[in-house]
Image (cartoon, rainbow, N blue to C red; front, side, top):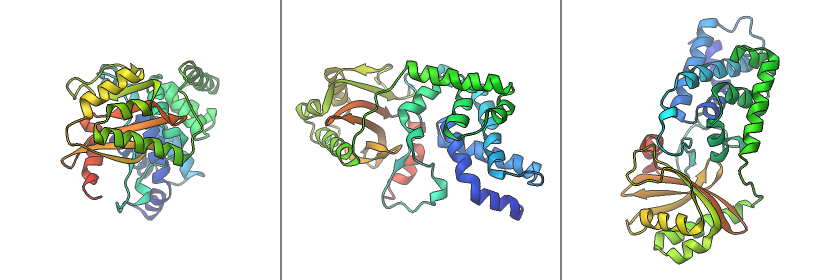
Length: 295
C-alpha cells in the first residue's frame, strides 16, 4: 500500500465504514465494502482526486448499491430483519477507528425502516440526508439523472413518514433507569415487575433469521403478549442480563454460560418501555461473542 493510500486509509476508513454500515446493516458486509472501496482507490490512484474523502464516500455508495441489488437472501429472510447490533462494552481495548460512529442515524428502528426501501432509495437517502452528498454525485452512483436521484430520496422520506416510529425525549439517566428495571425483572423472573415496566401498547420485534426455534415471526403488540413471551423465553434459564448501550440507545445483553444469546434494544417513555427490538440471529451476534468474554 502506497504512503498516500495508507494515509487515506487512516484518515477516511471510519467515514467509509459509517456509510457502509448504514447501507448494509452488518459489520461483516460493511467491512467487505470498505475493503472493496479502498481497493478501487488503489487501482485508480489519488492523482486528480481533489476530495479523497468525498470520492471514497460516493464509491462506497456504489459498492453498497451493487451488494444490495445482488443480495437475494434479504427477500427470503425469515421474520423481522434488524441490523447487527453495535454494543459498547466497557473494558475492551479496541481501536476507535474500527468503530462505527454512533449517532441518530444508527438507531435500530431507522435502519430497519431503511431496509424496507429499494436499494436505490436507500442509497440516495443515506448519502444525501445522512452524509450530505449532492444529488449530482448521487446521480453517478445510482446511474440516473440528478432529478431522478432527488426523487429517490424524496420517496424514501415519504416511506419513512408513512411508517413513523415513536420518538420520545428521554434523558440518558431515565432511559438507563428503565433498562435497569427491565433487566432486574428478567434476572429475578418477576413477571409482575416486568409488566409494570412495559407500556400497555409496547411493541416487540425479534430477529432470529429463522435460526431460533419458536421465535415470533412478526411484531408482538401489547404488554401482556410481550411480557408473557419474554417470560417464556428468558425466565428461569439462569441467564445473565447486562445493561449496555446498543446502537447508542439503552439495551440489555442476555448471555448464558458466557455466550451471548440475545441483544435487546429498548426505547422508553414516561418510565416505561415502549419498544423492544431483540436480535438473536447467531450470525449477527458472532462478532460480539468473540469480544464478550474479554469484559
